[in-house]
Amino acid sequence: MKIGILGIQGDVDLHRKKLEEAGLDWCIVKKAHELEGIDGFILPGGESTTISKMLERYNMDKVLKEKIVDGLPVLATCAGTVLLASRIEDGEEEISPLGILSIKIKRNAYGRQRESFEVPLKINLGGREEKIVGVFIRAPKIVEFWNGVDVLGTFEESPVMVKQGKIIAMTFHPELSDGVAVYKFFEEIIKGSV
Image 1: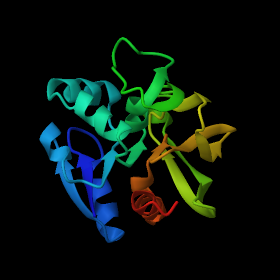
Image 2: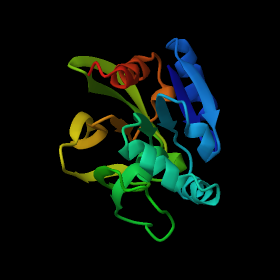
Image 3: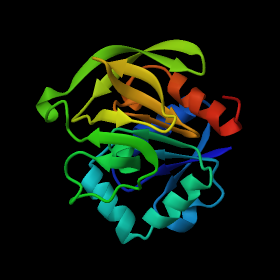
């Protein structure tokens, strides 16, 4: 099993370290042809406008969307979640979301960089409750969800972790927390055991 990490911008190295800690093979993906032969894909946090423009520039957006629609499992964090959203409450003129995940999202909903924060969260990973520290950095907020989206974790009654099919998406950064429970859960999704 090999998991690709989008290597355009964002927390690439931190996700790599978590995959290694979880005993999972990885590769960096920067071009469309590098999506071939991977079993799962990580869309990291970073700056959603920049990542969106780079996906378009390297002609990855259409290929990536097609792969995900065809069943490629995806783990998305923060900006990665924005990129998967069907609707964006603000800033749609700046970003071209892939429109795959049935959520409406508001970018930077919790404030700017200086308003970043950490909170304890309880998340449901395949029927197991796990405790994790949620690190929110210029985090988006999921303001609506539909079409069978399962909420796996909340903060202040808003979803912060959701699952739809083989996609798990978070508005926080699990790569900045202790432990690898989220990554092991992603492995289970890839294997089809959850």
